Length: 209
Image (cartoon, rainbow, N blue to C red; front, side):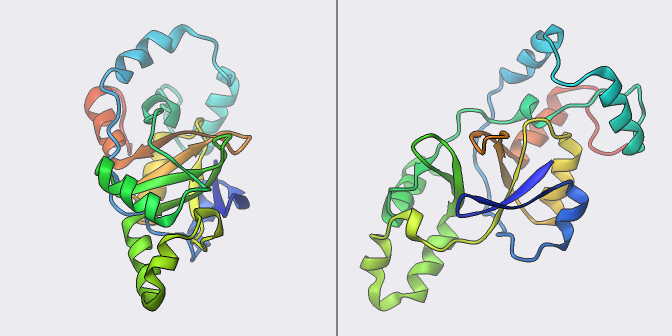
């Protein structure tokens, strides 16, 4: 399941097939979030824990998706970067730019004090905002993020097939997607790097059959 947010509010929530009609979703900049190399071992260790979905529901999903019912499904939660860098909505555009520069990353999720997702911001967006208001550059940089008009962006939930996420990222030219639970709380981020490493580390994971 995927959702489109605009300034902290859900504008759309549906399956990946219905995302393709959207036009205003921001194309994210290149992501440099680094997944934890140890998480792939954790996947195997956690395999005996209680699952959130029954085997019957998983098999039904596979049939609907025309998948081999014997094939293992890996979800976003299995490969996402959980401890991702964020910035608070009360911080300024200048704060966001300095943090992006300090951490050497290209984009960052904006959250509330309770870690509720608000938006995503990157260097390209900040520079465009400055250029649009070139005569008031200092004022623009001093604006709080919560008062800055930003484009819509796509999120996914932890229980999403990695292959569906990969397809959405390719179709929408997105390099990273925030992972949000059913309370709009940011729980991680999944990037192209995470997916590539997952394919490399997990023998039975195939993005396309």
